[in-house]
Structures are given as C-alpha cells and as structure tokens.
Image (tube, rainbow, N blue to C red):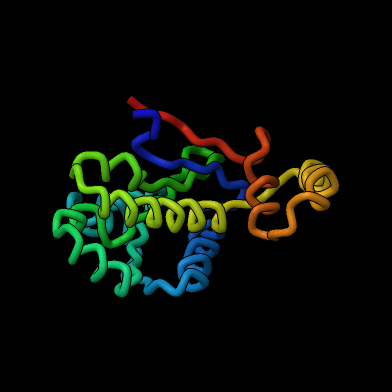
Length: 171
C-alpha cells in the first residue's frame, strides 16, 4: 500500500496558534468541535499532562451516521482526531490516513467514504498550518492561474511546494 498510515504537516505557528487555526478549520468544515485535551490525559496524574501534545476531537455527525450505516467498524477511527505536537521550536499537525485504514475492511463503499474523509483530514491539516514562502505562492499562482481556475486547486498547489508542506511516511 502506497498510502502512508498517518498524515503530517509542519506548522510555522506556535502550538497555541495552530490549535486556534485548527478549531477555525473545523468550524469552517461544518464540523462540531467535541473536545480538546492533552494526549496523555487520563494516563498520568491530573496536572502532570504534557501540554506539548494536544488532541482535538471533532465530528460531522451526518457523515458519521452515513459511514456507520455502511460499516459499523468505521467507528474505530471516528470521530475525527487531529493531534498537534510541539517538538522544541517545531510544531506538527497529524492525523490517521483514512485511505490506509479503509483497506483493512475490504468494503468498496467504505473505501469511497474513506476517500471523502481523507479529503476532510487533509483540509483540516492544511488550514491549520501557515503557508510560509510568499514568493513561491506568487510563482505558483502566476504559473498556473491561466490554466487552473479553481481557487482551492491553486491553494493546494501552493501548499504542496517542497518548502511549505511535507507528508511523512512511517513504518
């Protein structure tokens, strides 16, 4: 399988700013913010949680109901969970890759829904990180604006330049 098991984006914002951007992206995607907690909450004594590792739970309940009707096992990776981690000065945003997980269930209809969920996860990750290199963005827009009219497609091109975004493969 060529799909990485997790999706990761680097953020040029602080952890706190990245979390706020992620919450805004969740609202913009018409999803409900369920809760925000440290990754180790419940595993360590209260007050000893690591504030550098935060998980954000959100859900599109319409999509959740549709997915559960197709295959109840999809509940294993819903609601949406996005993790924001600070490693020293570096902040990363990450989530599971639904395309990779859907292959486990051998259900073509679920694969279609996981493809949709992949798009949601990618959009949430991308909306929570900064596009840093303005020169590259302008070059991408100038080079492609005559052949690509869709603003979302142009934004994706700008985000996926080598200096602005990375997808890591683990395992």
